[in-house]
Image (cartoon, rainbow, N blue to C red; front, side, top):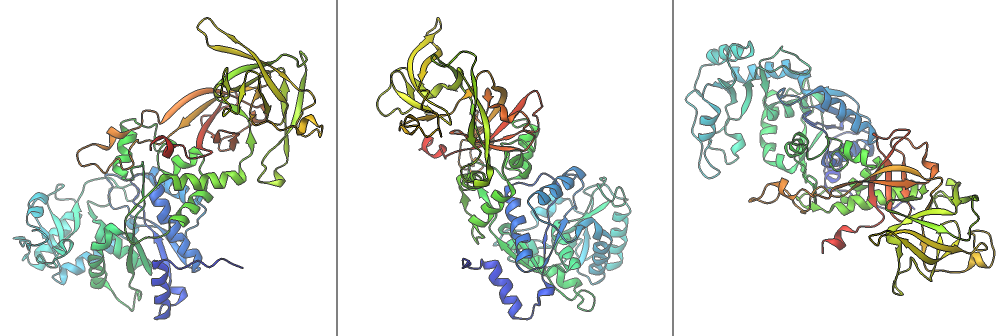
Length: 560
């Protein structure tokens, strides 16, 4: 029986619209990023929401780039955004750009001027801001508000022709300087900007403001439901006013409906593109795709999967109020996904050599090892075993109490897929550090052999790699980039003050030889340690692994 899942509030709105006259074929959604940076996990939530609605209602979803600010936008960002959406598993119907509509937006601006609903203001932006008033006090009307239609048309055409410098004039909508919604107090429609646009080149010297371009683009594309984050709630009145001025049911019959949901705020993370860019430019990270970054490309490089991110978006749901989601929810989703998919292998990150004194010199065995006990179809691989092996340093104590279930002198443990061993003695260097552990093994205790000795229960099981066969690998251990839950939530401190100095540790480790041909993006569970993936820096002669996430959440325990 299919599990019942209640509708979120946006789905309830759509269902109500379908009951009240909307038809299924009129539904259309859109994802409208500005190409001024790389997408992050917050955008992933919006992608999953909009494309998810498209899948649920068998409706088209447009990908529209709101490319109205050539000072910050680049083709590189356009390409990365398209790659991220495709990687998440979604397909858009039409690839659109606000720049596709520059001429139409200009023509509509002319229409507003002719209606007496827009005027050219020749004051500075600073002076205009001073005249805005406050939420409780009305603003002051611009001295240019009463310019004639003819003068406004002449000035606006000259702005378009590039005859004025940046900042000299703006085109404003003539609405209400006493409105309780300050966004309705004669907002800007256009500014003069002499910048080369990544698509239109130098064809334009004026560029539309976001509020003007966004709603009208939705209208041109006949988007039925424009889903925005909560910071745009106050913009809704302006969104509807702009569309109303150009609405023509005989040409474009559908008037889009804007509705808002809470954006994603993730703990121990910053989501501001400006702050993420600051991290990149100041080299606190290696780039937009640094595995510590919350960008989709960073998460992908770290080893996160599309399924895990979509599951995360589904798990946190759609809210009407802002809140902070603990990053451990995202980490849980990737653990759950990789637990089902990732092959198990053995790797030793902090090695100490173990010599099995009664194992024949020069002998080696290739033991059967299960690839993934969660997946019966995953099969087995062969793992080499020899007289000298590496184990983790933390898996041995010379002296230990009864609660230590790993290797110690005089006690037995099992080597994963291999034999039971018993600690005998240690060899130390001149400063007292253990360089070798000598043990004996029980030759009748081989895992899976069915002998009485192989069925003997011991409390500890250790992973290991054969010294003779081990491959050296660089392992990058990533932790959270910030030590504070809300690094950008402190008025008296800069978010950079909370950067975690231990967010990246690079070590040399040893891995089993089955990983010799591992390629970029391959994911594994290093048994008893965590999940790792092959980094793009990896080469045939130098494997590089990124830690995706540990087997359990240790952060909460450490920071209690």
